[in-house]
Length: 260
Image (cartoon, rainbow, N blue to C red; front, side, top):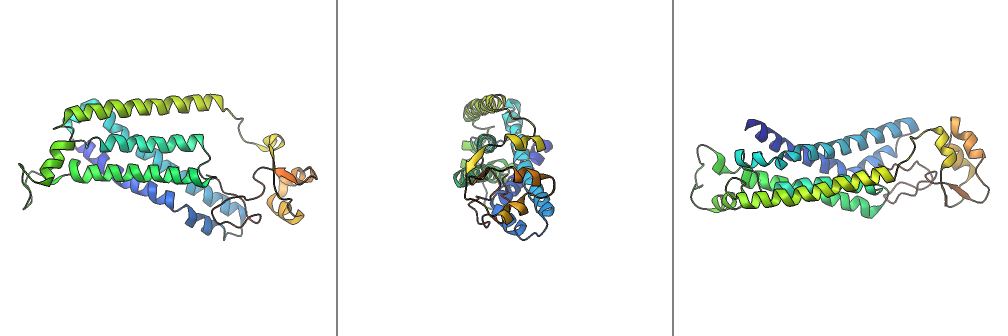
């Protein structure tokens, strides 16, 4: 039982960190925009995106604990709050897989709301049901084991006292997560891309863009990529990603576009 308690409380903190990193994106972009060294900016952005997504993946993996049917009998899980929270975390991961969530405002908002919803549901269930005062061996003053708001919450939403709701939540949320898994598998098999490398620059798709000044192109493509710049067509069409077309406040054309 101590393992379940540790993981459930740990997930409350992990979900808060995941949400905090998600909404701190604008702060990191402003911070990185002040870097004078391109390598330092790229490295800092890489660390931020990997850390942010790692905490979201960790929250989802720990949350799978509630999808062990035997755990419902051994530990008071908050249903349907905890299973639905895990579904929200899974939906955020699938959305990141399917959409360029850091490249579009609506995609970013959707992932942020999903993470926020999962965090609120998990913490709500942990405080009011799983770690309710009724779980203590000695009840604090003013808390009754046979009445009151704490008693009603535990009796209504604890997996030990409302097993029918627990199993219904388990079956429904497991079906949704299975659908997410199948969708992610199909998407990965269909949308296969070669590993990134210098040779892939030759196959980049051209998009309409404002004709950049030679100085901007020269600043963005230095060193080994300068030869690729010289081969750009003269029609004012440049490869996707050369100009920063981000919507979140970075000055266009002067700095690289950081896409998570």
